[in-house]
Image (cartoon, rainbow, N blue to C red; front, side):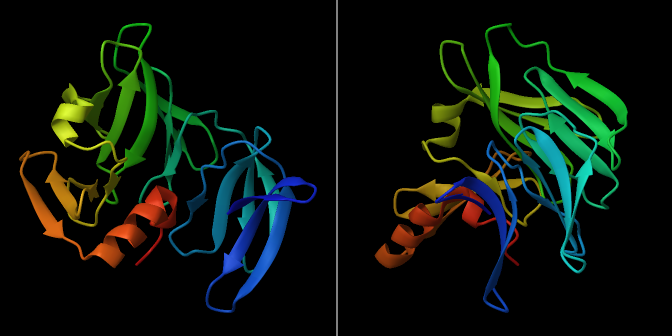
Length: 213
């Protein structure tokens, strides 16, 4: 977690099982936290540098910095997807660049809010700078842009979606329901929520729902 303490921002770790907390390092900026699949290593940015924190050893190591506007450790812990302003780059675990994907959007379009599916096959993101905010999704393996739609008309919600554990499926808060939307078939299912659950879901938001199994 990234918190603002008495002496400024810092990165910390909260152990929900043991109900303990650890301060890892002082620093700000967007952390883009990533866990290795064994939950032994937490990888994150702090003040523009890239770090690995070993939970079992309680040891912090500086890594080769992979610059991005959104960094995702892909399944298998062998590659990172680094989102860029005009596409994404694939790096190996140690930071070596393997390939680049560019979408050739208009120069004034800016990529924001990228998310990656749990199986590591799709990346979903939005762009602004044009007449309207657009939603896009692409194959990580091939780099092919699979869809581009007006975000408000397509999602019919202002909420920021996240990927569910269902293949190719987003879910997000929409009024008094959660909508599951399959990007490949473009079909959806709305699941009604009772008022308390709706309030809790809306207040938890995107980051609170990561790494919950």
